[in-house]
Length: 111
Image (cartoon, rainbow, N blue to C red; front, side):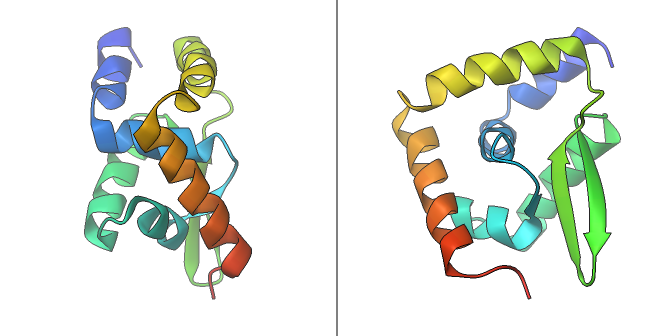
């Protein structure tokens, strides 16, 4: 992946919010959908976009697809994820997303 492709991925607000949540670890589509209050179709579209470009990998467990940040992704993604982590607590929307994700995860796993 080249840098332009990487920054196109990071330049979309929904994809940036998804990546912020995936800093917490592997998540299923339903968890992302609830935490971001977005439709399943929109989540799947963005996840597929990032997976196709090598930012994410997925694993199917029973009926659910779990996504995580590709551990062998472009080194600049890792650097950007580190910067995002330090910024997320200061951004109202990103901090709110993380709070909702933690609530979603505490309620129940996907089943």
